[in-house]
Length: 270
Ligand SMILES: N[C@@H](CCC(=O)N[C@@H](CS)C(=O)NCC(=O)O)C(=O)O
Image 1 (cartoon, rainbow, N blue to C red):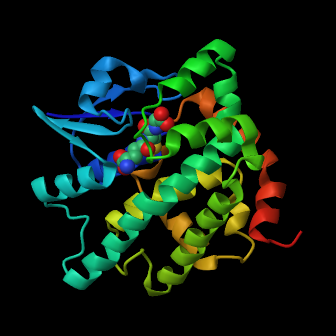
Image 2 (image 1 turned 180 degrees about the vertical axis):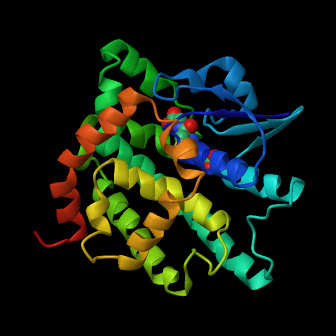
């Protein structure tokens, strides 16, 4: 039996839920509320010392890192495949899954905390919020996440590096649009792990009311890809339905308030 430790707001966990659905694999969930600090519980830390979701347990085998988990699922359950057959297309897919892990994910964590999660965390009250920030291990979402998360929560857009992270996010949206010239999917005609890796990150911007980054003709190929993604049967149940209502409300309330600032930072004319 496949057991997934996950959370509704986790982009990385969403990648794995999508892969499981696209491969028609049954799984059981263990819900870890990462905005309440459940990832810091000693039992979970035994599974992943970084205190991050997702974690996949396949019988007694523990697998961490969302991209590695999706590779494992592909190798263990090859059909239906989420990897292209052609080795060169596979390299293009992996360049994308690597970019997500190395750059887009830290940019997304920063943007989400700056625009919305800082307000959600504040609702914990000062004592619980301090405990939440203090509990992050030294090596977590990234090797510098502990200190950065605190600054993003405390200072929002004024935190050091905040603007660079937002420009980095936008850079990858533009890069997606460029690669989609060979579409309809990220590496050509087949829906692959590259699309799966990117969907939760585009959805995050959409939920935060920041879809102006690609709409109104700015990134038309990305806009079309996004419509195709939303029409897939896996989209609603694996992405949207898992996001708790209170969190959806926070993302949809606080996110759009930051659009004027985001627009200014990436240089979209008024
Ligand atoms: N490289 C890891 C990153 C996992 C990660 O950053 N998970 C986030 C949610 S997407 C998390 O659990 N964060 C907990 C925290 O910020 O304390 C992966 O791809 O699985």
